[in-house]
Amino acid sequence: MSNQPGKPELTTGSQPPSGGLGDAPDAKKFRTLFLSDVHLGSRGCQAHLLLDFMRFHDADTIYLVGDIVDGWRLKKRWHWPQAHNDVVQKLLRKGRKGSRIVYLPGNHDEFLRDYLGMQMGGIEIVDTAIHEAADGRRFLVVHGDQYDVVVRHAKWLAFLGDWAYNFALWTNIYVNLVRRRMGFDYWSLSAWAKNKVKNAVSFIGRYEETLSHEAGKADVDGVICGHIHHATMQDVGGIAYVNTGDWVESCTAVGENEDGSFELIKWTRLSAAGEAELRAAKAKPENVADDPAQVLAFDPQASSRDDDDRSAAA
Ligand SMILES: [Mn+2]
Image 1 (cartoon, rainbow, N blue to C red):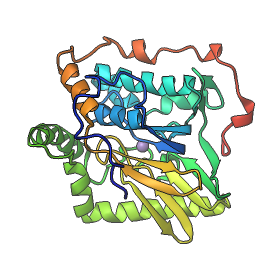
Image 2: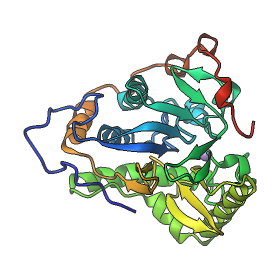
Image 3: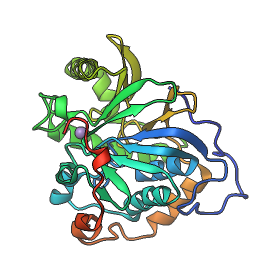
Image 4: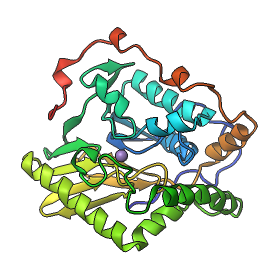
């Protein structure tokens, strides 16, 4: 896993206090970027780190590999601060600036599965996609819950228990408040626990095997997925298994370089601009929209259908 490419964490003065929604002048441009499990609308979402990541990274094509919006949680407990709005706006802005954006809904934003094959605000919505890398390798891109029989109809961390997971996320928030004050990077208790709990480890292994098996059946070279919040790039039975991770625990994304090579990027430390943005955000009200409908309302009929990009496995 690569660290952050020497970004101006330590620079001061020359950067504006807030980076706004534009990209940094030295943003790294990938051929393709893969992001998943952002969980906008939930308290665990590390929106500020993601905004900061997006400021320094751009791509010709951006795949949103599911669970970008946490629809389940939105119904129960509404949490939509400015930063969550900003993530949406920043993605749409990248789309307007020429990035092709493909959204593959997951189990937390499965309400979008009613709109497969359509476009919303220039974003293509599909169930699965075949991505051809620059070196000719073909990858099945899919959120992953579709093949996850254990967790498909339950929460993905069923083995840990929902209460334990929520408790871990809550603890994360406070642990990381203290860590940030002390100058440490973001660290996830739940991610750490997942690597320690024996059931979790075998669950992750089973998931990786299942997804790789599906890729083999689809006659492709690899699979790019999310869902279990466990970022990795590895060979599983001759299949290139790539999991983009998430923006709740691991704060990771996968980028494809111009030569078709892939890299896993971890972004757990805010840049100076990101720190300034976070300080400014604290002065604002917690919820900037009173109702989920305000941010989730859209009119799919107004968008054109795109039959060429229908899901490969619809
Ligand atoms: Mn999921």
